[in-house]
Length: 305
Image 1 (cartoon, rainbow, N blue to C red):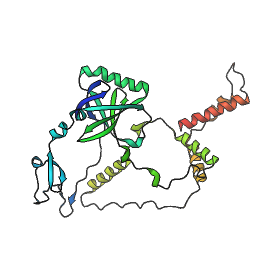
Image 2: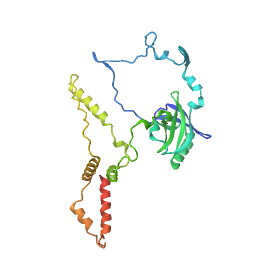
Image 3: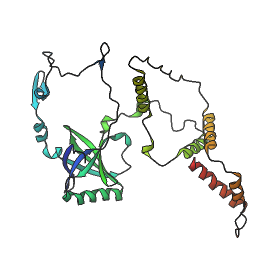
Image 4: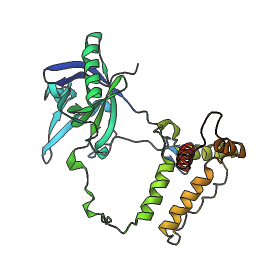
């Protein structure tokens, strides 16, 4: 079990549920170091005293607030906690809102909340299950790393997830963008073709099937350099695609839909004959029924594509 980075409780009304906060994301970024090009020696990051120019050890570093130029109030970790003990130890739910009411642009960073002991298991499960059954999300505030954040408390399977939210004033509005009006000249035929394309590309949400292809390509390039030796000539960089001529929207939509149709599995002569020949004891299909059957087959081919 991962180590809790924070311990406290979920609070709503008079209910308090002891919980721990656990990371819910695993960053998998490639790590690059800054090097001196002359001898390939790593360049370190130093903590420098701006007055003396000397490096400072972590043990000698404190946090201070400059209340006047050159005058500081020094605060320790205990001071940050003592400022409001309850705030630093509580995920305080302020409101419950519909699960789809929060705009995705507010979501910032996810964490798991887990019960700290057996006594908190039942109220933890109660909160999780009632949120799931009612389709609700708790809007809470929590203090992490000396900063109070807004958060969404929501169920995810058997777990409760808390996602830090951005405040409204931290989000920019699109008012300054040159956006098209609602009536931007889009025709009915264009909408029909676009809808067919979207329908043909619609699939269940399976996040595991998406990969960081750029990271994989970058690793492949690094492995090629390693295999070729340190003196390998840098690989030629592909020229970025130049902006081409403007293509008619209808033409693009038609070509996309046609390409999609070609990928759909075509019925064989046997399946066509079987579809046309009624089974024993089955009445011959009427034209309306045959058309309905063909429509069902078309939908089936779209889903399989």
